[in-house]
Length: 163
Ligand SMILES: Cc1cc2nc3c(=O)[nH]c(=O)nc-3n(C[C@H](O)[C@H](O)[C@H](O)COP(=O)(O)O)c2cc1C
Image (cartoon, rainbow, N blue to C red):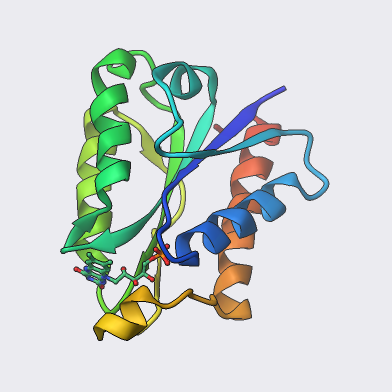
């Protein structure tokens, strides 16, 4: 059975909801093994074992979150030249921007020679004050539906052997 690995980090819940929605979409009616793993727990073995990836991170200080970067730092060289051609997609939860987190992950994925199979999804929570930044986030149903659909697309591609 093909497997989809969804690696995520989340401080206030927004990215977690997006990643969970992608899991729901991928698991719905598809014969695919879906693993949702926190970035801090994800290992090179998890990366090598999967056939496709979703990387889900908040944007913090115009970058992917530190723990997401730590995941890539720990896994990059262990997986280099061993996962080329596999499919991936990006989910970013941001206050108002998100573009540089996407850019950073795209650069890493290029190094791994992964294949982007969906446009990155960036959801802005409009948090831009200390209070709003610290508050728990609730992602809108429309945005969750986009993440679900991305998960479903990736699972279908795996089942059909497209990637
Ligand atoms: C330290 C810190 C830095 C942040 N920097 C940015 C930023 O550069 N750009 C942006 O759009 N949002 C920024 N944010 C807002 C978060 O991306 C936003 O709160 C998002 O909902 C966090 O996702 P989470 O709920 O999964 O933790 C920052 C938040 C924190 C805590």
